[in-house]
Length: 508
Image (tube, rainbow, N blue to C red; front, side, top):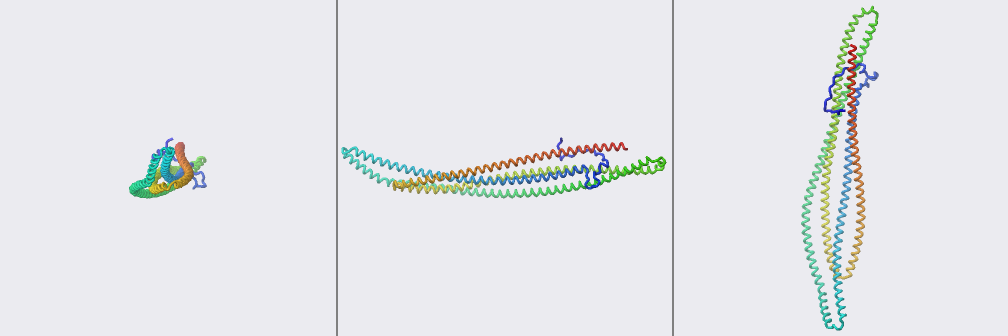
């Protein structure tokens, strides 16, 4: 079966002969307004089918726009939820890093305490060994023992004098190191702040530019959408007016044709009456034949004139019918072309909408990256402030530990108790961290379920699009079938016309 191309002109056939008058009569004589020929009925049904297709196309386009809006809303909701999850994970990571740094500092303090305890234990062991050696030598080694004891006393006094001096030296070294560390940290912090200020200014400028660009793009999108809606409304109104005008013109032409068919039917009735009169005259007696010859000749001339008039009217009717069929065919071709143009416009509008949605997604991704950068800068500032506070806390803890060394074992026991309390706090924090991670896993499973739901919705949308494509293919098959039926009817009309010509030739 050949495919119908609206751009090609329909093949020109030879005009068929006019049909018989009784064939053109409507079936119901009591309802002349409702009587229609098969051709008129076909064209009317064709126009109604085209109007229904246009309405269905508009409904599909509106449904597609609604589905796109629903998908956009769902996607924005999922993005918001994912962003909140990312922020929560980042905050928890920062807290975990701070806890690890605190644990590292406490480990270093414990190592220092352990080394001091080892030094004290070593010194006590040396004293014990010296006393035991003196007791073992006995009175035999009196003088050397006395000398040794006096030397040990001197050394012990020197050692007793050294811890304050060593402690002072240690404090001075620690103070110098802390001052140097503070100065270097202050310089690094100033440099970092200056670099962050410049980077923040640059990011602010980029964010302002992106905001302006997003506003311009939104305005451009709104203007294009408004212009597209206006153009579609104007085109739809013009197309509806054109279809209404063509339908009214076709209806008026069909009414004129129906009137002419009625007139031709009346002329055929007059001819049949004249034929009946001729038959009655021929069957009359021979006496009246001579008297009626003149009357018959006159009636013959009149009938010939009437026949010529009827033939002329039939030729005009055939020409007008060809014109009407030609105009109807052209109107159908034009309506088909307009329908294809409407579909092409709809597809182009959908393509433009997809392109704009892609640009909007790119802008959203850029804005998300800018937000991430801003949050990273803020988190870095908070981390630096926390490190400064921890540095001060570490310095204070070092000073307090130096005081603890001078204070003695009781303060160390208090420090052990405090360390145990800190261990309890750390265990509590670990439990809270485990509970928080459980909540994060629950929220992640919720997000996965939502993503799965969105995937199912997208698959359903694809299935609906395939169904629409299948309906379009079925409509194309229906159109080919109707064209084939129209071609068969044209062939039937040509056959009937040839039959009518043969009958007329036989009658003549």
